[in-house]
Image (cartoon, rainbow, N blue to C red; front, top):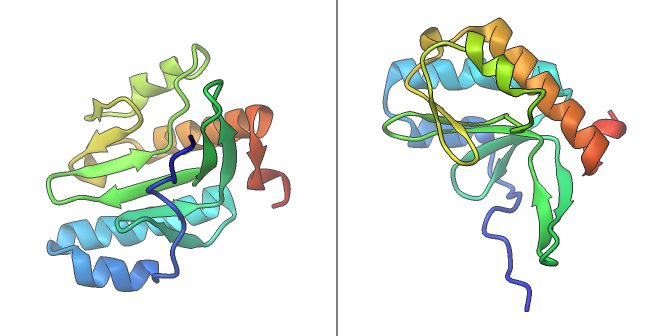
Amino acid sequence: MATKNKTTQTGVDATDFINSYVESDQKKSDSFRLIGLMKEWSGFEPKMWGPTIIGFGSYHYKYASGHEGDAPMLGFSPRKAEFSLYVYSPTEENKHLLNDLGKFKMGKACIYIKKLSDISIPALQKICEASIDYLDKHHECACRTN
């Protein structure tokens, strides 16, 4: 039996979320800069996904197990300890893009950074664009309508 996805789009305003959730002035500033960058790169307005993820655009996925759902094409969460960036498609073609990113940790599904000044924005842009390209080729993606 299929389970309901925990992370779905909500009606919460991303700016309101940052202003009420993020305590550090530096993290707020970085969050608003990420919104501007990801909006520019994706062509989509920020939308909240679940309680803490700010996403841009969407795509539909379906696994061999039958589990399927929707997720943001690009996204981030300004968590207390660090940012979680949901921007990377782990393919052989994309692995080299991480070489120029800067100071980060890699999780299973995301990139963790402390602050934007730790990474290269041009490298992040290439990663985001490669991820959108991957989603366009492999999933039902909002990127085709934008």
